[in-house]
Length: 134
Image 1 (spheres, rainbow, N blue to C red):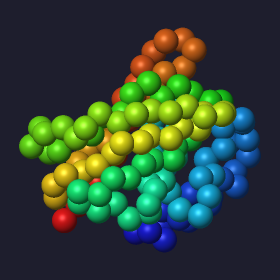
Image 2: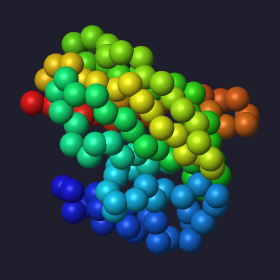
Image 3: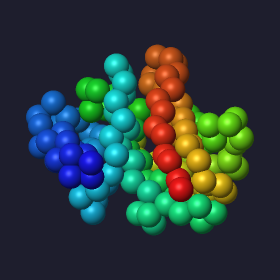
Image 4: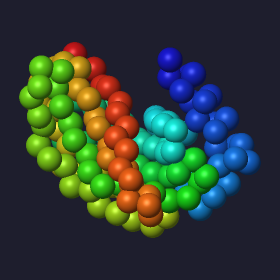
């Protein structure tokens, strides 16, 4: 699965359709890319291995499908039973890059990461990604 994700990420990074000001490259040749009709999110945890009860951050690029930077409005983390993790801090950097700090998944389970993204027209869209911790 990791090889497939890495190959997909390399393919996306090499294509001319993503030539805007918002690169998906997060370094280290790893990461996850999430797509919607309007947006692309590239994210990589730091440290690379997420452990139960251990703090981690996300390094993210948030872009429109035209390759322009988009605004990361909020991040929410929810356990499949409805429990919430602490509210993380979203720290903006340049050109659609963000650092999300204060993340910790306190128990094993299926966690949903929800990302609210907005562009200049004011519309907000939620993109999600599941993380399963054992």
